[in-house]
Length: 193
Image (cartoon, rainbow, N blue to C red; front, side):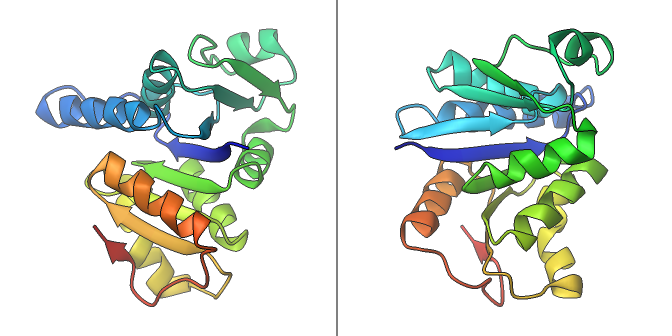
C-alpha cells in the first residue's frame, strides 16, 4: 500500500525576482522528488507554491489527490478560485478551509511544509497534535522555517517527529525512514540534514 504524503504551504505565488525564482524551482524539485516512490501525494487542491509541487509531481507520474474546501467542482472553481488541473482526484469536503485542513492532515502519514502562512500554521498544529511525521523544507520561509521556534515555545509530547532539510529529496527520504521505523516522540532538537 502506498504511503500518503501531504504537502502544505503557501497557496500564494512566489514573489518576482531571484528569491521567487528559487522558491518556484524548489517547489518543482519537491514535486519531482515523489516520482518512483511508493507514495500518493495529497494537497489542499490549491494554488501558488503548493500547486507547483502538485503539478510537478503529477507530471512525473505521481498520483495526486486534492482535498478541497468546497462542496463541488463549481464551488471549488468559482467561489474558492482554485485550480483543478494538477490533481488526479479531488475530494470535495464542503468543510471550508479550516475543516478541509483537518481532513487533509488526518489523511496523511507524512506532512511536508514548504513556506506557508496562517493556513499552514493551522495545518502544522494539527499535524503536531496528530503525532505525524512532519518535514519542513527550510530556506523557503514561513512556517517551514519557524517550526523549531514554535515547538520550543509551545511544544507538548504528541509523538510527532520533526525533520528539517533544505534539500527536497533528503527531506522526503528522512521522513519516509522515520515513518517506516515507527517514529517516536518529538526529539528535543529538530534533526537538520
